[in-house]
Image (cartoon, rainbow, N blue to C red; front, side):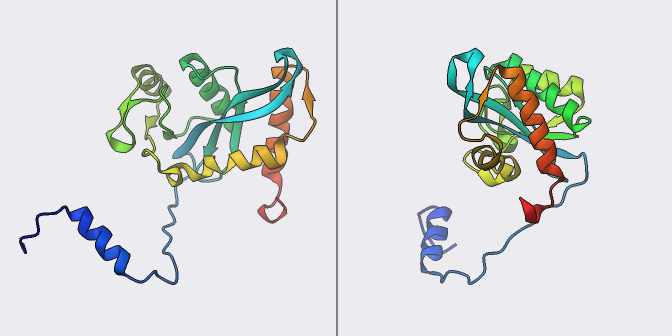
Length: 193
């Protein structure tokens, strides 16, 4: 309207640099209905498993229900499509059902290209979702707050669930012990965690 030839984003950046910082940062809390959404991601956790040769960095699949924040962790030796679907099935079993939507990170097993509502979904994952009856709602690229509830679990593994010097005989023992610790931790009031 005023003849400026630059981009709109350049104007927004210019104004934001000159505007004073707000005293309180606004927070938008999003409430979801039980069973309507879960968030999933892979974490890499260092642990000691004798059957795998000692100390290894293993992928652990984490699914968190958005309403209750109940979660499940499934240990794996890989991150391919077979492992991705197997981990979903095991997490759904532990959480007692399939949520209406699942929000994955931008893993190649979930999205082929892009992120958020514009993502091109992996055909295998899309087919699995249709068969299981959930909708895939990918997180946006480089936006960890889109799936913050699952990102928080990374700290739980490093601070609480994997204890220093702990050794597991095999992956099954590791899975059994972690299932018990997740159940136990979920029963604790938030103030005691």
